[in-house]
Length: 295
Image 1 (cartoon, rainbow, N blue to C red):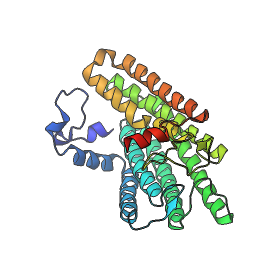
Image 2 (image 1 turned 45 degrees about the horizontal axis):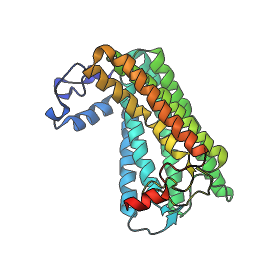
Image 3 (image 1 turned 135 degrees about the vertical axis):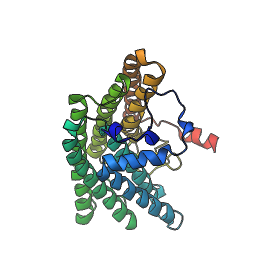
Image 4 (image 1 turned 90 degrees about the vertical axis):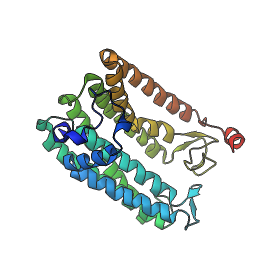
């Protein structure tokens, strides 16, 4: 458990403390040190993707090609940052499982890290070629790369399912609100992952229009049709949102933290379902006219 590895100078996010986080300006660096000690595999995977995000950021203003309406290096940048958040969050949460679960955590961490490296490699290769990585079976090579990425996305989903099982089988360390936030966050994350299968089935993420049309600046989410990526995005980031909600509630209202964490999860799932229903109906989350009025 990571709690046992924290020294007195590295007491990060303690649920029992009422001291503000701003009291220690060094807590992010301390958190990363602890993260590396408890799960070096996902720590290294995260740092690799930090470096790749830097590469994409450098290339972004230098390469003026566009793919599906966005600068060609925008997708590698977004995916690199997303994988950093995923790898480090998963490592941090699973470090709260008891020692009996840590061997399994090490094994699934390797599976997650490998899956993410393969996925980002395909995304970078296809960006370098100036073509899309997803839903691309235009020739044998593109189909092979897309299939390879799909296989490892499936592997990652299996690893995430294993992590969810472990979190429900073994009680994580921490107050009850945080424990339920962790468990429910993993569960909703899995639902968000499964929503990605809808896009694979449709062979695109836009509903009611081709991919690559007008979209939100930087994000590309369609402003003229439904877009499945919004529900997928919100579902996936339950991994960060719900454990954080449970932790905050455990600090602020410990006696009601569990009930409020479940309520917050229900509202969160309702938001994911609402975005999914809106996308399937072919309606954009934000219309092109609304975007034009704000620019």
